[in-house]
Image (tube, rainbow, N blue to C red; front, side, top):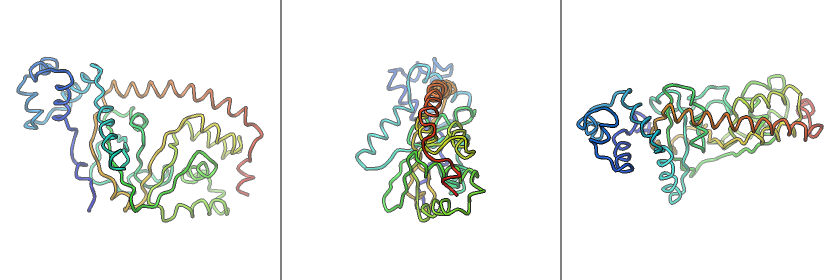
Length: 294
């Protein structure tokens, strides 16, 4: 398979990360070794890839770095973004519950995801990490994407996006023969990748309220906008996958995951308050799903 996934089999770049920490802190290998409770030779072997680091020591190293206030993943993100501004490429992130093995294919995700089968990536490091932060062995992949010679489709938070999400989530079975749904699906044919707002569990509850006839499309749209969804890239053709290059697998410490989950929880409460007000403000505006799909 001719695809830029040679790093898919690579583990964390521990040697490079240790060198970066030594540069930032000004520590010698011996001083870092003392902080980690290992010998200088052990640290030297890790840096030069002479010995594999154990999972326990790896977690200890990255946890130490994070608690020291060094945000390695954010620094890497900034460097990659700076390089890509010159090349016209896009930096993306893929949160993985376990280590990726082999080249991702179009069946890499569950069929009931936002746009069915495909390889899903996010624009935001934080949001991509949040999706897998509750999983013990999760990690974050950084990738670059070149959009040349590909056909794309972009969605915004609107009725078309809401109905498309609802369809792929199996919520429109009774309306599957309507002209609106048929037209909706037809517009995705021949597309290589999709750019769209990310729909998480909070948003599914709102979309369900729309599908169940509890709120109108206008209420639903404004409620969803209140949740501040980030953007995702969904690769749905082999040609699109060929335009992705895996850059690096990044370690997520327990403390880093807790930080992301805490941020998510704080944002959740504010967003839900906005959703309640949006329901009231746009009541009786727009159309109910039966009116749209009949």
